[in-house]
Image 1 (tube, rainbow, N blue to C red):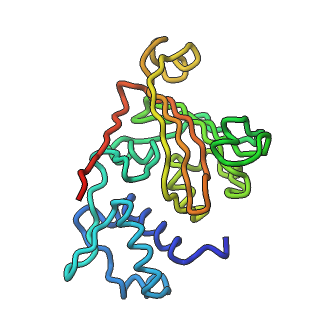
Image 2: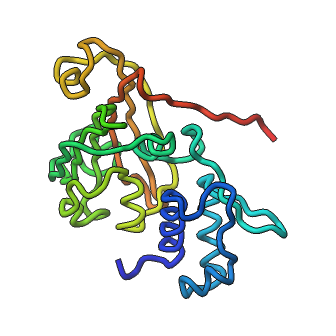
Length: 238
């Protein structure tokens, strides 16, 4: 952890501050000079962190004005990489986690292909139920490479948003994702966990998330179809 680049620490800290409302929508981040002094880093480091925040849609640099905090809370956009919990929080919902379990398992063929590792390699498996305003909304399963998140089993029950946790605790910056969506019907177990009728519609998400070094996480999420809104933002060619 001691070799984490300074820009990643600045990026994760400022992103957390924005999410928690320290810098509300429409406000300006401190100047580059103020951030240099606050973090005791170079201007190049500050600018690299701000560039990442801008790419994520959290801020916009305005010449002669400053770095403005944007409203990222209206919808989940596919050009911004967010977790389910972050999307729900952005909609103003109270997000909690129930029944979290973190264990070490052998990667199946599907998991090994997604994470680009040999079949049978040991990986972390994180299972949990996500709630929005105390109502179950998703069954989540994540598979992560052990070497990328050592000791994560010590944090059972201590986070809701996995991506945010990886950024703040491990200073991991997620660069992109490949996600496949499909519709399924709830079976008996899913209906019991999510408190919905058998056969109710679910949105099935299978996602591979990447860092600059390659795949980090393979996730499977089953979301209650009539409680979760997935919005796509598209732009034409410029």
